[in-house]
Structures are given as C-alpha cells and as structure tokens.
Length: 314
Image 1 (cartoon, helix red, strand yellow):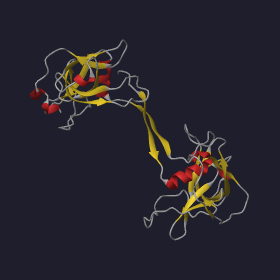
Image 2 (tube, helix red, strand yellow):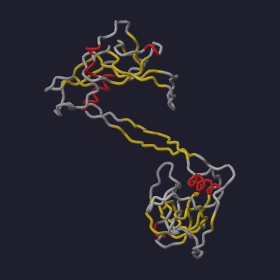
Image 3 (spheres, one colour):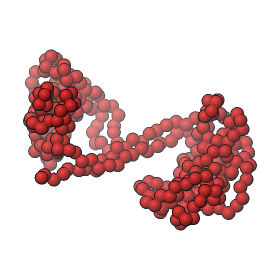
Image 4 (spheres, helix red, strand yellow):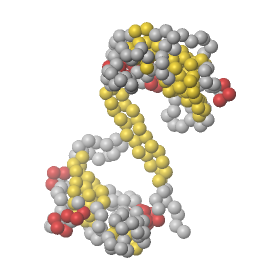
C-alpha cells in the first residue's frame, strides 16, 4: 500500500473592524485600566457594553464605570492551554460579574488547580504590563479576598487618543489527509502529470478527482491523464497583495480547462501582461525545479479556443 499523504494546513484571516463610540470607549478604557459598562433603559449595567439594548433594541450610550473586582458565576478548567491563549499554564475559563455590573464577562482565571476554583469566589483583574486597547489588556483574573460592592459611577467615555479599530486574528490549523483519488492526483503532479478520474456513468473526467462523480454520485476509479495544455475559461485580476505570497500585483488568477477534462481548475497566468489575458487563451503549465505543482500557466502561442469549445465549463 502506498504511503498515506498528509500535510499541515493553516487557514488564516486577520479581520479588521472599526469601532463605534461604545466599543471604542470600552477598549480605550481597558488601556487606561478602567472598565466601562453601558446602562440600559431598565437601569441594568451591561459589561462588556453593547451598542443596542438586547431586549428593546434601543441605542445605548449611557456609559458607567464598574469595579475591577467581581464574582465568578461559572467556570471550566482548561488543563492544556493552546497556542495564543492568555496563559501558558493550565487555567480556568470563568464568567465574572464585576461589582456594579449585571452581566458577566468571559475571561481566564490564574489558579493553581481546579480545586482552587468555585462558583461564587471573589476575583480581581490583573492588568497586562503593556496595554494597547484590547481585551487582552486584562491579563487574567486572580483570587481576591475583598467584599463585593454594587457601586458604579457615570463616565463620559472620553479618553485621549481613543482606540478606533481593532484587528481580530482568525486562524484554523489542521492536518489534511487526501483520499485515494486526490493522493493519486498529487503523486502525478510530482511527476509533472495531471490525472483525473472518469465517471463510469456520464463519462465526464473530473480534475482534481474527488473519488465520486459530483453529477451522478457514483464512485470513480478510471484514471485519465489530461492536458498539459488548456484553455482559460474565466479569470480575475488580483490587485491586493496577499500576505506571505511573493507575487507582485496586479496578476491574473484563472479557471483553466485542461484538454480532456470536464471541469476547470484554478491557476495563475504568467508570461503575458495582465491586461492581455482573455477568455479562450490557450495556456500550458510552467514547473519550477523540484515543484510538486505548476508554478503558473503561460500562453502557448496557439490561436484562441472557440467559445463553443469551453462554454459548458464556465
């Protein structure tokens, strides 16, 4: 049996968002070691604050400062912290109702073990040494022996140099293991060949193969070598440079129907000015030394394909 292929993959998207006046005041306040909530029409104080009342949908702007101490309302122990979590040692996830607030804030509690955590325990904020205007300005909560207080005081929400936007990193790390069909496809690419599979029912050849026909739903097994040349069916011009991608913009990314295939695959077009790429352009793969897939596709110099030859693959 051939070796099973696998590879670590990362899907990452840093999400940038602007802040309204309430969220801006809350995060700027954390930078200044001040916790702000927002008061609703029925006089409840919500921490973290929101822009609109979750019950009435009324716009909320009445900011109020609450204490940096509070009470654990519920918790869960995390014995094995992951990368980028707030603490490297085991800790507790906690919901903490800060003194003066009517709702709980999710954060982490630095505790020696689960036996040291209980609902109703008193805690206080441990501030991060360097603060930038983010929820991580609260490094964690820590046990506290003081009594609870219900005091909260009105706050204007005004600070010097307010935080107006944040970047939220979203990332998924996983190990991808292709099945039989895609393993054969990837192994063929390492030999500078492109292999698809033919459906025994409709006779269409799918590249890359998935092990089953997406139209008929039956298993596929017959391998068919396609290409290497193909036709550009549709394309887009990329004007924004991607992180960690050493390709100068603008460049063209296209759907390419390889000769003999009934499904277009993706590929970058090179060797031609971006504004000269067109539907029907005939292209061929360009391989780099040691590369396991085509680096890009370039024009072959052939006449453009007739529209009727690829219209079903758009």
